Structures are given as C-alpha cells and as structure tokens.
Image 1 (cartoon, rainbow, N blue to C red):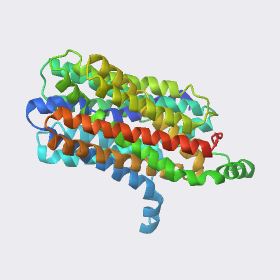
Image 2: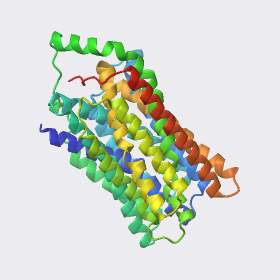
Image 3: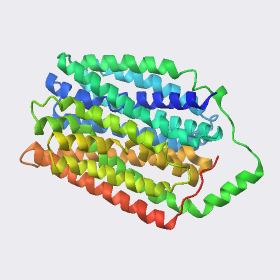
Image 4: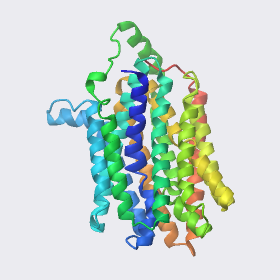
Length: 406
C-alpha cells in the first residue's frame, strides 16, 4: 500500500475521533447554552465526562496486554480492527447526542472519550510504524492535521448553523452522519493485510536496543510533561467561544475563533512534517509549549479581536505537533512497547484535561464575574505550559538527539 494512503487514512481517522468525537462539543456548546438545555457549570462537568472517558480509554490501551493475559484469553485484535471499532462507536455516540435525553449525555460523552482514545492510540501507533517501515517517517506528522481539519470543519459548520438558528441537536445529527461517511472512506485501509512487518534480523534489533537502553529513565519525565500539555490547553480550547462572546458581544468574528484554532493545528502539523528526523524532539516540544503558552497569554493580555485571533492561532499551531514529537520520542524510548507507552502518555494527557474544566468551574463559582474566573483559570494554564517547557529543556540537556528506530 502506498504511504500516502496510510497517511490520508490516519488523517481522516483522527479527524473523526478528535475533531468530531471530542471537539465538536466546543462549537456546539454556545448553541446548547442558547437552547437552554445546558448551563456553564453543567457544561464543565459534561466536558470532564468526555475527558474521563479519554483517560479510561488510554489506560485500557496501556494495560490491555496485561488484562488479556490475566483473563487467560487470546491476544486482543490487531490495531486496524481496534481503529475500525472505535470509529464506528464515535459515529454512533455522536448521533446519540442528538437525542433530547440530557440525563444520558454524560454517559454518551464518557463513551465517546473512550472510543477517541482507542482510535488515537492505535491510529498513531499503526500509522507511524507503517510509514517508518516504508522509509517515510516524516509523513507521520501529516496524520495529525486530521484533528485540525475536523475542528475547522465542525467550527465553520456550527457557524452556519448559528446563522440559520438551528438547534444544537441538528448539529450533533449532522456531525454523526459525517463521522459515519468518513469512517466508510478509510475502512479499506485499516486492514491487517496491509501491514508490513519489521525485520527480525539480529543486527538492527541489537543496535536499536543498545541505543535506547541508556535513555529509558526519560519516560517518566516525558509522561509528566506531556500531561501538563493536556491541562495547559484544555480550558481555552473548551471555553474559547464562550470567553470570546463575553469579551466581544455582538462581534461577527465570534464563531470563527474556533476554526482559526483548527487552521493553526493544520499548519502546525504540516510544519512538523518538515522537521528532520535528526532534530532533538525534546527541544521541539519545549518550543511548542512556549508557543501555546503565548496563545493563552494573548487572550489574557489583549481580550480584543486581534488578541483572540492571535491567541487562537498560537494555541492551535503546536497542538498536534506536540503529539507527533512526543509519540516519536516514545518510539525511540520504548520501540518494543510503543502502543502501550503511547497509551500511558495519552492517559496522563487525559488527567490534565479532566482537571481543567472543574478548575474553571470552581474559579467561576468563586469569582465576582465570569471574566475574572476565566482569567484566573487561564493564568494557571499558562504557567503549567511554561513548567512543561522547562522540563523538556532540562531533559534535552541530559539526552542528545538520537535517530528513530525503523
């Protein structure tokens, strides 16, 4: 199979799982608030239900080999089958949100989080491995344009729905149907028969193990720093349309800040694909965190049209580039356990995401105005991103750049 087909399928898969399954909630949130079916505190907890599901799904990916052994069952399905199952679940759960059953929404969003974690981990692991085996590891960054494309699409679609005064239930229905169509398009690619297997020659394996062994102590700090990214971006990413509406009531740009964030995601992933594989990915990660911290600061320092545009773009640029560089680092540190270690990092990212919305809800309840509450929350988020950047800089001093395994 041609590498471009694998990259394209990974792109679409992540667009469905992340751009729709997880982040369609953000542009639809103002519509749900306007419909009167949700308020801000309940929205925070509904967002957290999705992030909790993402955490549970990531933990299942991390520990599933051990779980299957403990149960005495056969090995779990190959990654392509797990991706297929997760995509089907994402489409069905998104359609379920169109039902006027508010009591079921937390469960649906939780299950969507589980499904998106499975799709993310297994799409990332399978596509990055298959592209590396075909000699084009840099193409792996292209799959991470998928979430940005999904965000742009969902954001622009929601803007049109707002203009037409459609209810949020119609938005969930449309996104669910779109997820099903995209799943059908990539279905043939995620087939175990398309896999290339790595060489079992003793020479390369021994060389790789020798190169990796001195750096195994870096996985703990990498996991911690990656979790800070989940906390650092989530408040802005979840409440960006709401924050903008409070700062710029009546502005025609209100519904475009989220698509601008998605455009930044696409541009950042494309830029990451141009970074040579010999570059120190820890330094790249530090730079990404500082750019994202600048995006958070822009909306704080200048809550104006220009500030929100710059903030949205800077927040989006490193969003999936962070994921690409971190997952490549995982392949260097743990080449034989890449999928489970990716699940571990994704789980820590999920922990950061879970903490963010309740923090915002607590700040809102204890502040004189919503604006003050959001400001305090964003200040904490920006500080977390700066701390993460410092951790990567410290790690980069201890670990020079190393080539990726094939």
